[in-house]
Image (cartoon, rainbow, N blue to C red; front, side):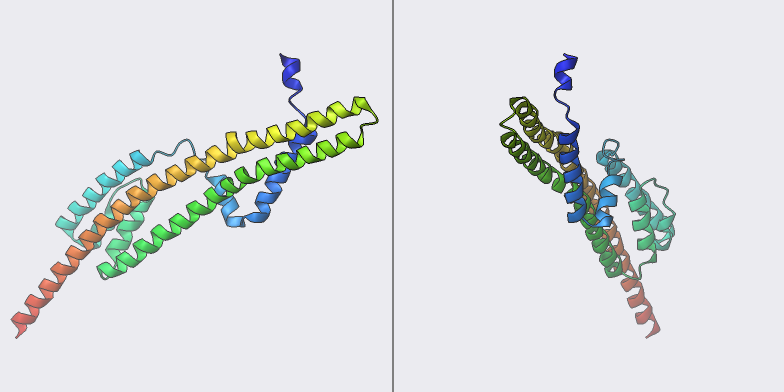
Length: 225
């Protein structure tokens, strides 16, 4: 069993596929996207967007209560472990009007989408390149095999290397890069979904505050006349 498994390991084939995949991915990606792609491995299994969404929902209700009792300028005092909600509350407290908060919110969501897509794209690119590198290794192995046809003993290792590069490329794409990209995409969609809900609810509060301020100004103007 161990001997059979050892036959599936070929350092040259593995180096060719992994090294070629890494090099091609580095060339096709930006430095910031590469850093985000590697950083995304940390929350890959620990991220819980459903739990974050529930905490964010509770935090928005806290913001509503703070606004009702202390005013919109105090909503940044909300206590929440969700950084996005803290930043949104701060922006809401500092915004002069609902349109200002809306502009920030849309830009923030778009920036997050772009960052997530960049990291996902790196892993998706690696998943697409790995099988191609496997095929390149297969072609190299076949060339070596045909070049050594005069020596039957050299043909078997060349043929094995040709097949193993294809195997390594498929494993790298189907068992690593592809699943990572797919999970990151699902996590990103789930995160952006609850973040959009938070922003929509806070914008409702901001518009209500605008209307209340406009009524107050109108009443003051009517009184002064």
